[in-house]
Structure formats: structure tokens, C-alpha cells
Image (cartoon, rainbow over all chains, first blue to last red; front, side):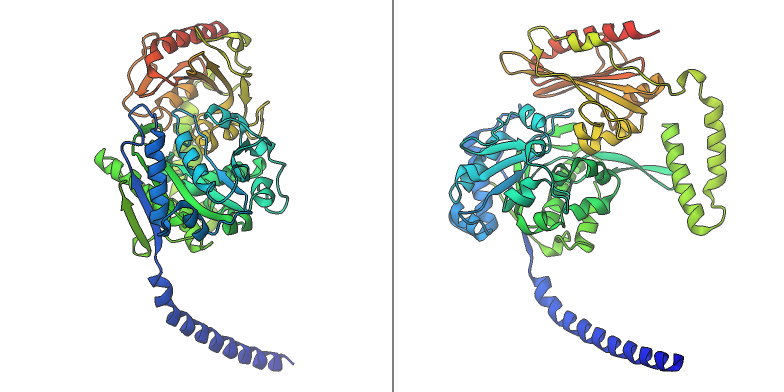
Length: 327
Length: 203
């Protein structure tokens, strides 16, 4: 009996090995086609969009966003661009913002958010746009008017967003109400001292687009992201975020190239791919850090995991088509 | 900083020890560090249960400004306060305060008729030594600070339009920020008022 089992086991192993070899061969054949497909990231800068007191010029900011969006999609109008990104007139779009007034103001600029909203309104009514963050108070402190159910663009925190989905453990704003998501992060880095061997090394511990969705989580899970890069990456692989996100946008009109130290980069970064967009944002911070003679920031662990384990995008330069524009 | 380093070394050493099933090179270092730390920690710096910031703080407002909404109180994950824990306030940025024995945070916002805002954060640490360590930590107070008029050990920063500073009073680390740096003198006067209130709670 045992011999019979062993023999059939060997047979199964052979069959499985052949199947695996066939799959590898098919995979190898398919690789060139996949590798050839690059992810587009648009890095757009306009020094007239913001001054050195963090005051935005609405018209210049709008021009910056509109041209960046068209550079991303190749379309001629905002409406065509959104349609190419998958937006339909019946959609409800949730824009996840990162309102952060801690130490220095790095909340999204209202002028940029208004430019995004106006652009979206070429396809959907204003009332089908929801601006959100986890904390209604933080939205207010960042200058956004709360509008839970009135006419126009809606704006509220997840604390007023109808609760959390028990399965995905995410706000119902994105699991239930919205059909599309825009991930609007701020260009900032949070550094931490990490012990490597007996030495303390300064490393970037928080990310941009991935960290932004901490604010979409059920509050009990938020702190898990702070020391668990796998958990942080996994959040963005949950169906509602993965399937509904149509655009990753980084507000770098004013950013921080080291914790608590701002600079006016006067740019934005756009991509459909959160990993590629985040890599580009870190690269922008590293250009500034090089100019200030500070060690470059490494790619955070969460980004590597997002790419390798959850297949959320690409971070390597050879897989990215970087389009720089200066409207 | 020594405590943080030791905690992390202990964690790392313990993991290595478990993984390899034998004494690892870290262990003698840990023992020595533990010994040094135990010998050097004065009894006055041992953690004690802190009280909330004085009530007078909640009644205070900078000249020309009024309190916007209610003050907010944040604790730790283990002991959240009325408005949750520190991560509800500053996300991952809270980790660095936890490293310095963070206990609770008093947060208040003030506004004037020109829409300028002033922010007051009072971080309570377990000990005065930890509050001073937090002030010395560049992850909280970046390099390039200027001294404060009313507290020479304090640190101020001007990043237009932001102006903010930190100082320590007892086991409290105080942060004050004004949204328009042209009102930095007003913020400084308010900082001196906050300091005098906190001084009164000292034994």
C-alpha cells in the first residue's frame, strides 16, 4: 500500500514538474511582451503655481493639473482623459486626501483639489465627488468646508462616512458609496532612526500613496501600518482600493524633503501606478536631498512588498516611462 | 536615547537568540548596556503616573485669538483619551514620541478674525529627562533651530509662512505654531504664558 502510494506520488511529482516546466516556458515567452509595457508617470512643475508663502495661483494650478492629466492619458480634453482612465457619468469618485497640519502644513492645496474637482465635473456632477480623510476636524483645519449631504462637492471624514466594511475593514465611503477612487497624497517624508546592527541609521519609514490609505482604515487597524510594511502594502491590495483606483496624484506644490522641513517644489506627480508614482516622488525628494548634501532616502520596505508580493505596480526605472512637463 | 537603543537591542538580540538557538554576539553587549543603564538612571527620572495638563491651559488663549472648538486630548493605544490615541492625531509621526515615553497630548487651535491660526500641543512624557531627549531628537526638532527669547534651550523655526517652536517645561514638551510668521512675536508671548502656567504645576 505504501509502495503504491509512493509510486503514485512519484508519478504526480513528474506530472507536476512537467506542468511547471510548461508554465515556465509559457511565462518566459510572455515576458518580453509584459516587460515592454512601461508605466507612465508624469512629473509636472510650474513655479508660478505657488509662491514662497504657500499661496497658490488658482489659474496656474489648474493649468498645471490639466496639462499633466493630458500628458498622462494622451487625450486632448479633460473629459477624454477621465474616460480613458475609466470614469463614466454614473460613477461616484472618492478623493482620499492627507490633511496634515502637524508641525508644518502639508495638506493638499485647495486650489489643486478644486482643479481636480472641476476637471472631474466634465464627466460627473459635482455631487458625485467626495473629498475625504479619516478625521473631519483635520479636513476643517486644512480649510475644507464640510458638506455631508448638501449640493456641490461633498466633503467629510470617515468618522462621518457611514461606518466601516466588516470584511475589508475600510471606510464604506470607498467600499460602498464610491465606485472610483483618486489617491491624492502629499509630498512628504517621515524619517525614523532604524537600528541596523549596532548602528542607528536614518531611514524613511512612511510612504506617500500607501500611507495615505491608513486614513481609509478602520481606526483600530491604523497603528498596524506603522511598524508592519507588509500590512501597509496589503491595505492597497484590498479589492475596493485595487479595483477602483483610477489615478494616483501627489501634491508637491509644497513638500518636505526631510521631516518637518518644507520646500516649494511647485510640482505634481500623476500615474495610474501607485508604486511607480511613489518611486518618482521619492526621487524628487532625493534630488533636493542631494542638493542639500543629505543621504538619499531608500525605497521603503512597504513599496518593495507592494511590488513583489502584491503586484501593485513597478518601481524600477526601466519599467517606467517618465514624462516631465513644465506648463 | 539610551533606553530606546537598549529596548531595540534587546528585541533584536532576543529574536537572534531564538532563531539561532544559541548565545549570539549581542548578548554580552546587552548585559553591559543593561548594567550601565540601571546604574546611571537616577530615581527622580523613573516613570510615574502623570496628571493631565493644568486646567488653566484650556482656559488660555493668545491675544487677539479665541479657542476654535474644544481642546482635544490624545493618549496612547493602551490608554486612549477622549479623542483617541496619538496616531489619530499625527499618524506614523507618533512613533517618535512613543520612543520618548509619551503619555498624553493636549491639543488646542486658536483663530483670529484674519483667519490666522495658532496651534498649541503639550506632549506629556513619563519623565523630565524624556521630554528633554525629545527636544534633542532631530526627528522632532530638525537641525538649524534658532533659540527662543524666553527659553534659551527652546528651538524655533521659520519656514514661511510657518513659524513654530518647541520648549520643555518639566516633563512636558510644548509645541506652538502660527500659520503666518509675521505674527511670530504674538506666538512668543503666548509661549511665555504657557510656560508660566506649566511652571506652577512643578513641585
